Image (cartoon, rainbow, N blue to C red; front, side, top):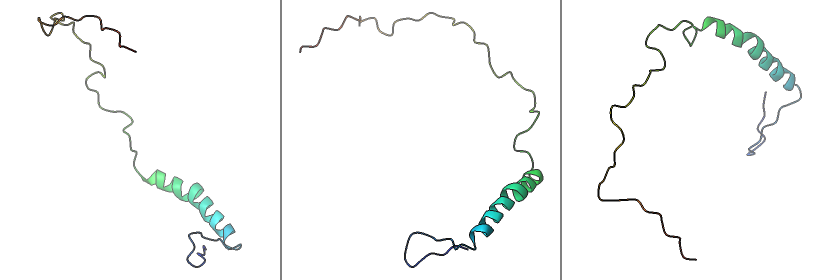
Length: 82
């Protein structure tokens, strides 16, 4: 149905084969794919089992934030020279 002329990287479709290729593609899209989709089982379970809720309520923190170091204090940065 498809011809590769010589050592070229391209393919050519003869004029009598283009209708056959179009018919095969239509057959695949409109007949074969729906049949296979009906035969194959579902990918996703319609009713998943019940379990934990999807979001968990967070508890307030027991302690407040504290400094990681007692020796370092933050100061404003000096402007860079130009």
